[in-house]
Length: 391
Image 1 (tube, rainbow, N blue to C red):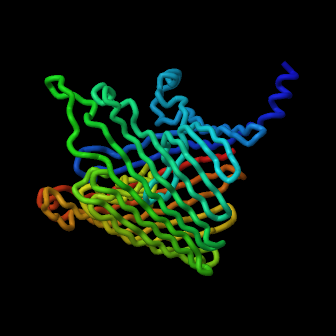
Image 2 (cartoon, helix red, strand yellow):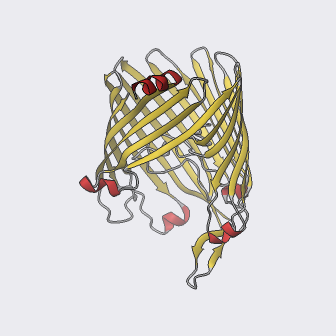
Image 3 (cartoon, rainbow, N blue to C red):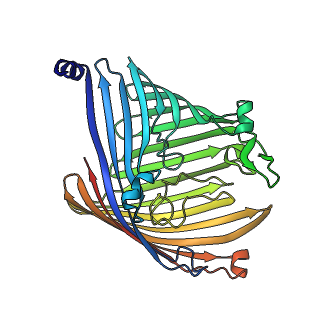
């Protein structure tokens, strides 16, 4: 046994790393005053552990496990019954062959927060790197075991595409995502009152694409992105698209920035894109995504970051957000606009451990049909405190 363990160590390298957090969350008036719902608060926590192993020849595996990634509800000894008590976030293998790496499995996928971020596709990927140029080809299985009706004809949901990235110089980089989703599914997997399978209406196949650019001119940081989704691919009447641009300047310990953007004809950005109360996938987010499936959106934001000391950092957002809805061919302009005022503070307790507080206020204002119907528009307030570590 001793000889075997020594031999194994000589042929493989295994590393463990990860992160963990515990949070307290408070939310009030997230229904904007349209019900009798009281303010709510709760705790949640999670631990994530990465396992990375590399064979002597360079082939590798990567996986990440999550432990107890749930809201506290007094589960105690019953935690083993929870679906997310212990689960796998991603797990894949890869083998480098010169400048090309072939990998397969359930893997992380990040392009841009405006288009697609923090995804977990089941994917076969070919990754070519040469200096500052990178080209990726991928094939995703989105839905293989659909339902009894579609399984008979092997009607699946897949996606194929390429990603090209180029580091132009030390200051500028850009990348492009082009893909086609092929959705052959004909049924929803549900049945009507008579027990008959419900057939889907319309095609869901189509093209998607995005571009992202990041750069610097002296102390000025510039970033921008644009994205497009075919109408069938995003399930809307028209093709959707959108874009944003941000310019920031570093002034010593203070960094202000201005961001403007829009979405058109149902395009919705990834939920990681945004601020605190609008988008950004925060636990206190009041509007889950930037963009609206039923129409258009526009926004402008002032963003500021400040380094108070080596261990203490602050950030703040002032955002104007406008939603226009197109319902049944009737353009309902000014359905809602909102102002977000939010901020955060992070204190580094020790190397690898920090304490963060984030808070935000969202003040909505309804117009048109909603206003005439007497829909309330009270402001929503949220805040949370988080202790986080990395190891």
